[in-house]
Image (tube, rainbow over all chains, first blue to last red; front, side):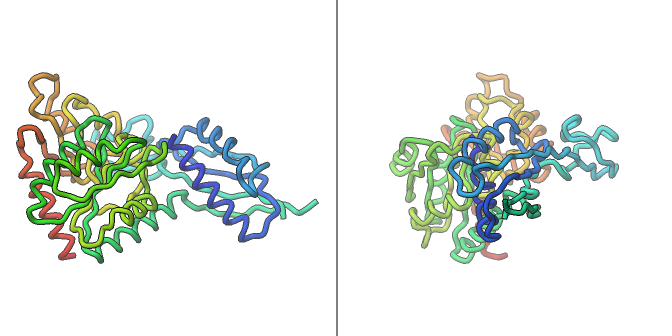
Length: 115
Length: 224
């Protein structure tokens, strides 16, 4: 459900860039998805394949999803660790005074276009 | 055959949404409207808690409510009948959450001018609403006793994001295996700075305390 809303936003933004750059069509789109961004890559891809048929520039676009590793930082011992393995609790000192540094993002990295 | 080139965007999908949310927050502040985003799982008692809260706040403030659901208008009808406020129903058309653009549309429909507080009752869901900034000044969630004290472990983001957590239906504590202390610790693990207030909208327990919290927050917005 939620993936579809994000795909719609991605497509809107890419269509706008395509229009501004007067491209003929977009052939490839690379999207970076954080490991803990709560986006399911398979669902995202399905939503994209369904939605692209309704677009002006993305009809033939191929989607590449790059998964970004999630890392958290501990404010007590100042170490960084893998979020998916240890969640909120720092494996180095046991503190929960930690925050997510990276892994929650959904970025449109780049697009390949035919001019 | 045309030429192929790559355009670098390196743009967060949420960038536009974040900007829209910041604009909405600033606009509402300039109008003196305090917007509260109320999130929870379905059935946690958002509408009941809001009715109880609004009836304590409406002596002092003019209040509006936007009820967001996938379908039906039962919540808007109920709240308009039982609480002293202006209410409208928003239909999300299948969407699992609200974002700032949808919230703005709702506010236009409600007519937020002249109101002091607007409660946005988000779609009952602990996953998606947490991902999107609605433009609210305060994010809150309601966790009901029957749901279990381990909810913050299962749905980290929503508890991380919320400034206020109301633990609802505490009148039912004796019927469930629910450890209040453990629940508060689980919430704190997600957000050290959140305020946690256990309430019962049914018996009225701690509802005054929850109302006080809002009165403080609203007067603070005026001072900033």
